[in-house]
Image 1 (spheres, chains in turn orange, cyan):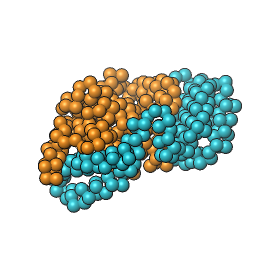
Image 2 (tube, rainbow over the protein chains, first blue to last red):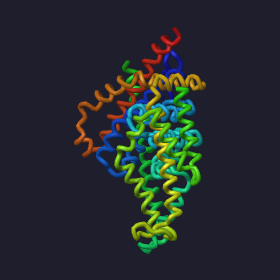
Image 3 (cartoon, helix red, strand yellow):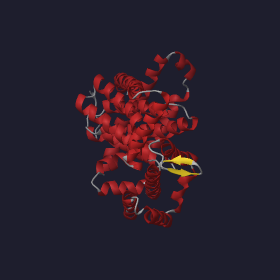
Image 4 (cartoon, chains in turn red, orange):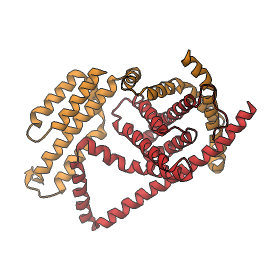
Length: 205
Length: 188
């Protein structure tokens, strides 16, 4: 994939690329994350996850090293920790887990179109499940019993059955997965297009 | 770093040990301990959304779910659920305060040293690199998006791809160019 490699060796070059894309991911989380939170836009978590998928998967296309997305996620999560003056355990673990899922899928399926689409879909779908995961840690497993009992009671009042709730959850998760898949597809094409642009830049230099 | 980690683990252990029998003494004791270590951590309670969430978490299930076996100003409620939900809230308060205290006490430099000590040198190196590149990256993004006509891109989204691919290519190009000099510096 790489036509030229730096004199310091590909390993160091890859570290620089990971650092840059991790910083880019972190910058996006800090600036856009604060903006979206401030405007109280719905689906802000999904929007951030789509952009994170584009950054992480584009960066991964240029790095052969396994664990690159995990490192980018680690950098982004730490930058987010030092930028926010409040409890940030939620976003910190969200970024790390998104990175872990994307890295696992790319490791299994490669950096091709399918790997990117599936990674994006999983990264964005996870934003739906993440609040339940962190609340499980914070409040303990009993929180799920409370949610379940409340949902059943609300279902009784509204004359809805569990299958209606399940259908809603599937549709909601599906919409997120489609958005994430599109982000992954976009990342793959962006990486390909950037590779061509990079060749032109290197020839001109 | 060592002390911060110790306080962090103590806070987590206190939160995990909370139960119906000991919460009346353990919870205030843990709160007092945390207040002695870092009073600023208690600022998290200035957020109204947190209180609203606690209120909803305690009130709704207690008033609507299961057998309502007790009364408070003529309002029937589920006493078992109230006790258990209060425990959940106490546990989450301790965990949130502990996390807040831990994150406010560590600095990027301390974290970097900690990472190196636990044999995560490669990640430590990448993290330090990213921190040093952050201002330059911010400037590069600012330059790339400075003259962008966003309204035109909203009308023709296909214009976004060349713009972003130029940005990504310039980032990779800069990374490849900076790698030799940085690598030599490191070797020196």
